[in-house]
Image (cartoon, rainbow, N blue to C red; front, side):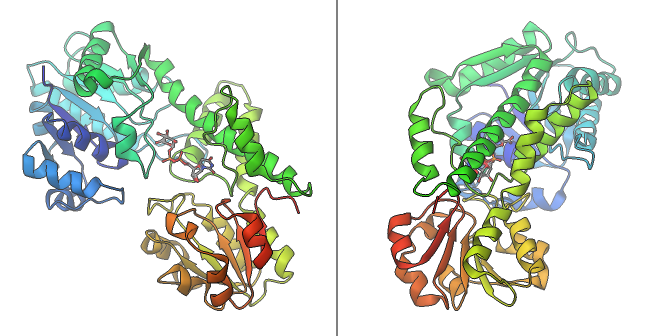
Length: 444
Ligand code: UGA
């Protein structure tokens, strides 16, 4: 077997999966239109922050199993299977922008025109139901002058990896979903994955194209709903003296029907996926004349949740004007430098609006944050530097290094020892005894 792979679009999904194929000795070619990004990768530097990615990239380049180019035609010619892994960003009306995916489909179509041997095209980007069949397929057929199912094949294969643990997730998925245009398309993609995972092959589920497309949206929407659900209970806990959401979530999670995952109460979800995918699913559903009220509530709860941090801060400080507020963590989650839809953004904007002086620190996202907040806030070079002389600290992203901070660290550095735990990483008994302490979901 030993299929040769090309991946179009070298973001998180494209680069991580291309390198995982290369790591398992498949010939893997990465393609991107961004010349600078391609050059960075060729030089062995990862354009994205992702644990272990840099080392894996260098290993695969040295071994010669991975290469990178801006030439789509060559990549199609020299591979058997092309994965489309470009972004599908959200539009202001909630629906998604298919510009990049259309462009890649055109490029692959043109290359297929010249190719006489077999080729399978696999859409990995997140797209609404119907997109692969009604939009991608016609583009591929028009530009190749060939017929899908006869001259080339087509699948949709949604991706479930998380930023920050992208390699681990790619190598250890819970399931693989193959939406197939026809049986032959699905057989080939299944054979590729069986060859890739060998005895560790997870359950492979084969469906038609729109079902696979909707599985991805339904999965992300469900996880987002779990988060908004637990945040709702957390908000009730805060008004109930003596009750702590972490105990409630822990016990709920012991019920196997519920599971402990994605039950961490906090300041809401961010990132490039949940907010965008939820909006897209709502927009898709409305187009079909169905108003998905549950999904709208999930979104509304998530919009207001970050302001809880500001409210807790005001409860303890009363007036924020000219107070120094230290923000610990800016990225939308730990182990990434990604600021997209990060909850730190509405929190900081609100603090500024209320007249506070904000200083922030993040182990990885400072440079990206500077593009957003510019000189409206101060940037610290460490957690200790950030909380120095602060009137209140707000823990926004639960980086491992913040978990090591002790009550003494805050007492010794801060002007007033006031701390808001927005992600529930500190022990309330220990911190509550020594500091003025408030936390999401902690009844007081
Ligand atoms: C998410 C999904 O988890 C992946 O399965 C999916 O492949 C990906 O979107 C995608 O569609 O590409 P990701 O956005 O990288 O992955 O990150 P998550 O770990 O899911 O976290 C998303 C947000 O939820 C973060 O802001 C995180 O802080 C928040 N979260 C997560 C909570 O507030 N509580 C939790 O219990 C879990």
